[in-house]
Amino acid sequence: MMAALSASCPTALKEWAGVIDAMGRGQQLVLIRKGGLVDAARGFEIRSTEFVFYPTFEHQTINYLRPQYRRYLEEALAARPPEGQVRVELAGKVVWSRQSRDPSLLERLEPFHIYNGQFLAQRLKWQPDQPLVVAVVRCWRLAAAQQLPVAAHYAGCKSWVELDAPVSLRAASPVLENRVFEERLAQITGVLDRAQSTVG
Image (cartoon, rainbow, N blue to C red; front, side, top):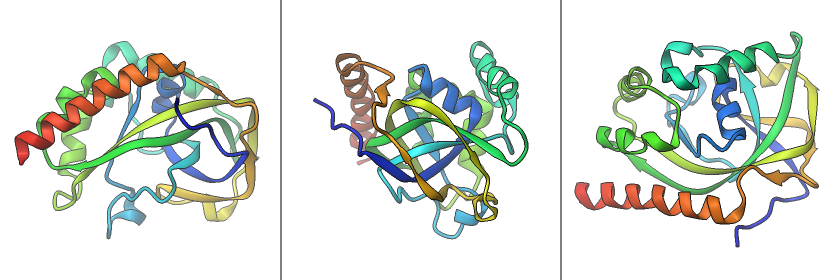
């Protein structure tokens, strides 16, 4: 049985709105990160295994998504809140993570994300001395979406934000039921384990 969420969460992870939409539909289960400009010195770090998703639209381009998934970005743009507001609908918990420098791993993880080859190549080129962080995330949908004012310290090309007030996670419901998520988690970790043994 997968662990439940805490009652509330003060930490947000910035991620492209289209990717968050895909995660909210159970289409994407992995995050592939190297960090934003503010994170560049040390790369991406999992500062909290539990967080709410903070949708961003900067640097996001439809050309980084496979054609069948581009509607996720289009729908996220259509539902974008007014300037100065951020809409929080999903929470996530990292259940597995690994660093990797193996470019073939990204292709093998294709069933679990919506990115295309152009995006993956760009990720590998960004800060080439740093490994990719591949994190398997289980998502929950909040009982009610919350629209929060954007504080000045939320701004910037960084991955993590400490919110001015915690977001309630009570009555949040998992996007995928336990059995389905555990089956897909086993598939993903199998890919990661095979990649690790190949490198080793």
